[in-house]
Length: 203
Image 1 (cartoon, rainbow, N blue to C red):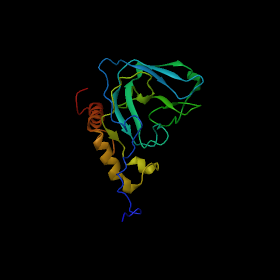
Image 2 (image 1 turned 90 degrees about the horizontal axis):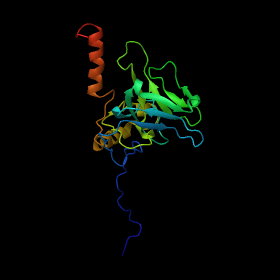
Image 3 (image 1 turned 135 degrees about the horizontal axis):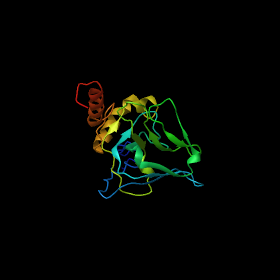
Image 4 (image 1 turned 30 degrees about the vertical axis):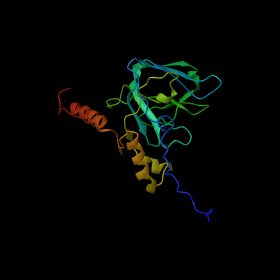
């Protein structure tokens, strides 16, 4: 006799990280030299031109970066600030937090962050602007290569402590090594900048 009440074995749920990587991280194109970032407004969207391939693209769990609804992480990269220009409807932009290191300009209507320059004097990141490559209307931007500030998703309520093993396992599965700060390459970049400023290394 069949047991109709027997429960079927459930498949393990895949942890959602961000819509742009949940189906796999897309590789960039060597011919990509930039494009246009567009906010989510249907009426008079903000458009920002980027004339560079992105650098240091990564998933970020910090509490400051803009994330799509339901995403545990943002996906954010940097470009040289002189490669960024606001093309349309810049009057809709405002800095989210003027006291923050990254001056994140967000659309006042839809809330999307369009660009975030670092302008603090003598900081390692000065001259760089943080952007969200998913906002490009064109394909070809280099995909993320690591995850930063992973533990911070607990602070913002995106995950419970007991879920973190699964989150880190999924990041590793996507070939996005998880860090609770920045990647080793970026941490070395910061340390090198400080060493040169302090005279430990030649400028």
